[in-house]
Image 1: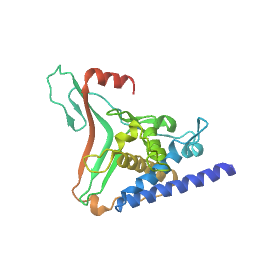
Image 2: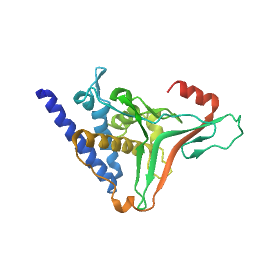
Image 3: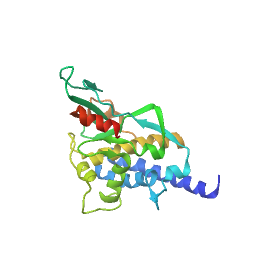
Image 4: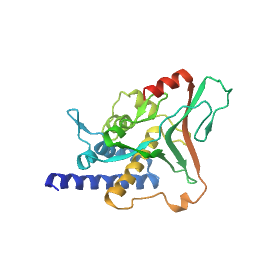
Length: 234
């Protein structure tokens, strides 16, 4: 291993430690730490310099491939646990986004990306995947960079982009989409880091996970023409 790659690998290890600490703080009731988490995710996944990919994970592991998100597939009847009641030739379509929220008994809400373990993508392609289409299309890179560059991760922009404006709205569990989407990506990257460096990161306490908790799925219902155009232009 060259000296430069050894240095970058140590920086990667340290960045993953920061992600673990941010998640531990969020689990302990400090939800604002999603801002610091977004800054680290930007360094790891979607940093560019003069249009060149300068992301830390790619720099250390240029051939790395990881599990893709579950595809956003449109159906006239059912998407995951979500059901649509209409006639056989009804014009509506339903799709579930690859994003699930868990709300625990003490009020803590976290989220997870839903992945397809049978499909692997290079890191650059992974970051271009859509998480939702409506009311504005959100891809992983745009989520991270909107929060990191404009929403308090490393900078605050007084002019909100459409993506950040949407993400600042509250979810059914109170936290904003920005908070929960960043947490979901952070939890995924934490799991990746555990595989790369053979460690076990922080977890939501067993006292909470063993209690009854609620699950929420993000879904969209749309006209068949609109859904078809989304499917052909992901």
